[in-house]
Length: 210
Image 1 (cartoon, helix red, strand yellow):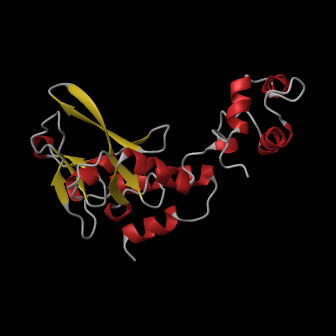
Image 2 (cartoon, one colour; image 1 turned 135 degrees about the horizontal axis):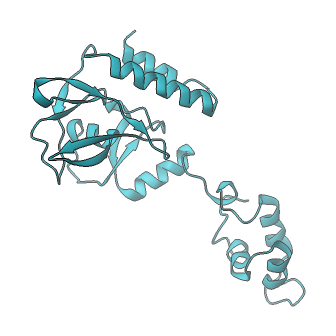
């Protein structure tokens, strides 16, 4: 079993969020300790704004290294609040942050249609293996996020105003225009605006509720 295969198995394991985070940090530590991995290929990092002149490279295992002053150093990425891995690179005293999965995709995955986003196929944001990445449009990426559960919608969204039961109550018992059972009555009942009730009633929102 290779290191890459072991990482794939571990990342797919049914762990709790805390255990998953701890595992991510351990894998990052492992990556930073190894100078080279079996079958690893390195390519210069390409950026549309900054020319790094071959001073930074990314590998097909989505590791990033610097080659300043003929000294090779593996750069340990940070896990940002969104769950992605990010590295900070330097040029002429200035810094620029890059998402690791984007660097890897630019270096190894053709993008003939010039799509804007890089998608994680299995939904695991730290699994930046080349075979787990693909170029997508923004709308394709959003649809995939909902499909894999990375983004929540309807009642599962953190800012949802209603529970599923409340949405069903509105759709079953609300009567538009009725002074006793209209939108404003239910808006007062649930402490929201009448437009929020109207959107739920007409299925402009909470489309996940049957």
